[in-house]
Image (tube, rainbow, N blue to C red; front, top):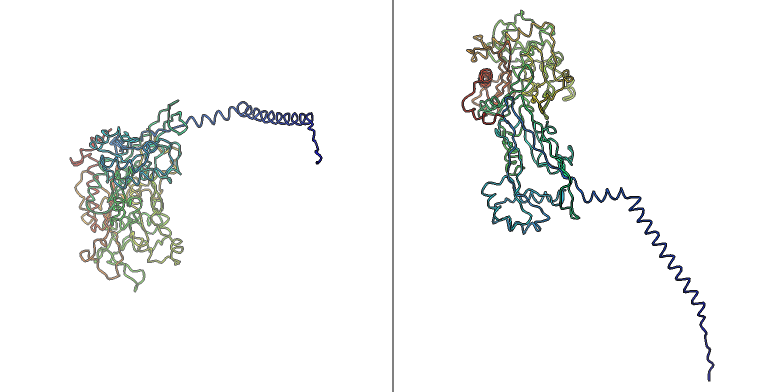
Length: 626
């Protein structure tokens, strides 16, 4: 029988151990509760203001309301850019659910193009406020509006919204001057206040719409709204109404603009009319143009491709960016340069043969009149547009004085104050040619520049501004579009030294003498602009024919044998009344051949503007008068 060992339990020791464990556990619980309470105290008492603000930020949102865009008027109060109410089909994605299911429901009700669905999907990927609607189809017709309205009860998340959209009542003729608005892109948002443009549909893209965007846009309204956890607006707490954009009134005369556009006919070209007393642009035409309304809600791929691929370049602003040889329209300025620097005089006679040679056996630079003009003086050189006179004058002067003098009139510079994208053209110099071609300036280069050919390139705006300065006897304004913005001049008084200047001549009488010579271009029996005779007011003008390609020394220009695109450009500058000018005009018909075309156009514009006498077909402008 084995031995059994009996183990006795020490209950007292176990009791003490249990008590110690309970005490430690209690202390741990108390410690954790203390930490939790202290943390709660810190968050709810010490950091109350901070977290109360954060909670409000999650609960309260600021929502912007785009303001009505300012209108654009011409000088007579005719609306050039208006706001129109339209009805658009919009969708709240959070309520609509599956887009494919929504499409199946909408297809039998309304015709929505594939491109519109693609644009909608693209907008879905962009940042937006929860429960903010997205436009699916804009500018619903009355029939479409009625069809959708009948079925709205079974189309969750779909609604018809009234929206203001931009409308350009006169379309193509004003596209390059007024510009247009278009849908806001991510790139556009980089240059504006994103909060201000939240919910805005479009932004100025070109022209006046783009340059005065800040003023035209206005100040958005702000609403403080309460939202739920999903971002849906539950109630409006506070509201500040939007401030409409400021109206912009232009110097532009709407009837003159349309008339100039129509007078260009089927030709490509440009017409600029300026008030010499203010620098205000009365007309700025670039033809062909395009319908700016196509861009407002987003132009279709098909329409944009059509415009982009058009060989006539309707999207190209010829008025600001077109580069042309100024041809004989440069001769009055060349003559003044010769007088200023002592290379010519009014009394000096010159025998004008049918050609000019730098060297006796050198190249012959032909005059437009192959038989020559005989003995002439400076005045006759303007009246009859004698090429050889300006060949020899430019040869004597050289390029440096020519460059210095012509730059005073704005050639080679961006002149216009309130439109972006203007070209500088090209006023060549010795330094320019060395940098561009690694060659020196040759005498023959100067000879070509003397008649506005060769390397020299000018824009219609530059030639028109120079003509305006000549009309004002040396007082030159930088061309400007806007007469007022919000009722105030957009150009401050202290900007006068920048926006205008006076061109000084050693003999100020030369201004009037040159004007008299340009008047005789019209009134003299041999004047190149004599077809404009017979007006009750006096006209000062100068014709020009710009070569598109260079002729060989003995090559004859035969328009009938050439492709139309190789025909000479036809140019004309003029101002009227000559002794107290109210309007200065530059007109160019691309490949127009004869300068009679722009001369006739200019006279028609003078008659209409000075007598306020336009064809009856322009009476429709009265419907848009403010």
